[in-house]
Length: 154
Image 1 (cartoon, rainbow, N blue to C red):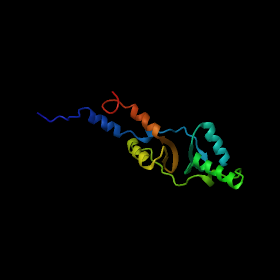
Image 2 (cartoon, one colour):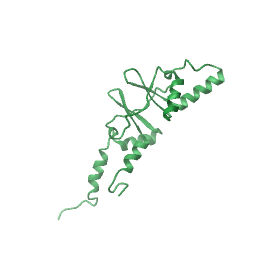
Image 3 (tube, rainbow, N blue to C red):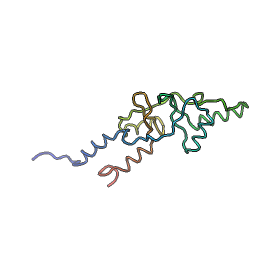
């Protein structure tokens, strides 16, 4: 008489969960900004596409930063306070250049810990130095709620 796993089929399902990679759920249709575009143009793109910011790439699609609504609001405030025009301010002048990115082969649930610890809502996905997608907390929620078996749903 052999010993049976008390988890039964769940062992296999957990293994399958461990195989869900960022590339399986990342968004490749994304709003991307160019470092040379004007900040005003970037703001118009954010408004039109209903996004709060996005990755900034150079002419070779290399990730060079992230621009956010907060970066834009700060510039608007500074421009109004100091009575300075915004027309010649470029995205590269106001974007954040310290960007935490992830690789498409990372486990989506490991990235979940990064969401929590780094307090980010989304991460740019970079492979071979180039931006290939974005993964958000919402993407992770979609994966989790789509799971079946003994994990979250029956």
